[in-house]
Length: 154
Image: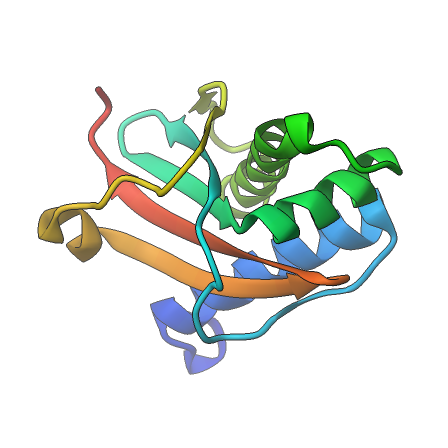
């Protein structure tokens, strides 16, 4: 690892840069890691990507946080776009992760986002052991959580 950083620190730094660039470029605002827990997980999206090894990027937000994201992406409030906004953010984060992690060296498949309203399905302990990253970020008046984990290709 460069500069003696651990794999966890490298993963966290890479994800922070991906998220920061998305919010700066797409929404013109600052988005910072804040630690702690998410207030609610009412809206979710996930994108799976890989080739030999597959990863899942999952974004979760509360309703109020999703409303803030919708306002930032579209310039207006629209509750019907909550899941779409979460899917768009998740897709941008997954794409940014692929670009920063693999660049043009590897051809990966990126599947279309899955989105939903309601609590995120509980994961088994095995799934938690495959966790690569989990972090909470703050933007404008909202927060969201990103999780990155290894998954089966199915």
